[in-house]
Length: 551
Image (cartoon, rainbow, N blue to C red; front, side, top):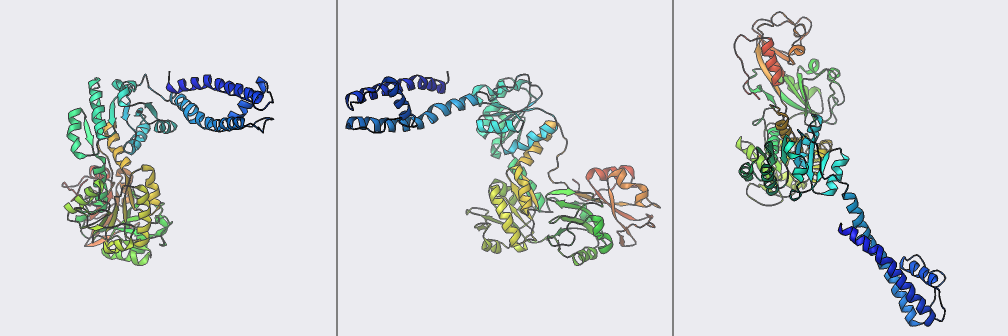
């Protein structure tokens, strides 16, 4: 029997005895000390009312000191009794009754994924598995967390490693086990699973990189460090030296590819690409737009130009300069200057390491002094930002460990230097949208990173894209001569778009009704890596060609 049931049974037995005993003493005292005899039922009523603190019936005055002392003691005893009954007897009983209904097993499951311990690192994974119609079972010890997961529609087993929860989650029939506890817990879970005879994949998420080898020795199939991968993704988004926004752009001859930020006051905000008529007005071609960390490419005529969106444009240097002159409120992103990095924890150190490895200048701000920290201070302090040279920075990278601090810092930074892009590390996936709304140009959560990695492994995906790109490729006009791009249906057939044609040393960016490809033209096409491959297969080139950078 549960301890709370034993206590409740004791209460139900002892409470009537106490009431009767108090009633008998009261009946005796009223007869002997007060000379006002009371019957048993009258005394019982008084005892019940006094102990329950609901009243005292017709008796409200006593003369004998002993009787007064007795009544006072009963009154205080009643108050203490009420406050003791609920926390000691009733609440534990109700809690255990409720917890007894939490799921303890999921019999009959097969080909599912077992996740040991819920957390930010597996939140996106559960959603990915749900979309792929792959069942998941979460083993979670915390009762409150179990209830929250059940409310979201997830299958959960309440338990810990010590109470056969792996067996009760039908592990032996599962396709994989994901260990998401602390590193020592994960090692114990992996060993227990292998000792139980589980032969499927075991994927472990580790906090410390040097624990990778011990996890593999314990029996893990693969070990991941999402914080390091998150740091790499943030560094890649910050520096073109690590990950060019537009692949192949280094060898595009007269074509210049640049990123243009649309300011909040720009006349372009809210217009569609067709309404803006940027090609006719400036001579550039829009090949994509970044909006809240998402790449919209190739663009369509009805694509809206968003406030704080970042346009990827192609054209001559003169045309890109003209864009800034014609369209007030647009700013060309800076490609020189330092990167200001706030936060030097595990993620921050990885970001700084990768940026410095490719020759970027990094100004690290952290609250605590240490090796690699350039400036000790608070990212919210304007004096610290001035000394770090934030206004001349290529971007500021927020790698602090609190989403609330990241949100507040984003607001401060956008007020201090609105033209400097903010790249933010986020812990909880649900906060990504909030931080984008605060002004961040790119935000990525550890949940998104680990979710994509784990889902890719479990669902057999061959590639995972944490940072989508546009690829620009320069090809010859072989096989295109004498045709208009629309006649060939290049976009419909391959997914690639023609953005410019170079002929006689000049760039052609508008393709009117009379335009035709001519022999010897150099053609610039853009799209995804898959679109480039499709173009080359559909319109074979006379000799193998490849962009300078491939992804």
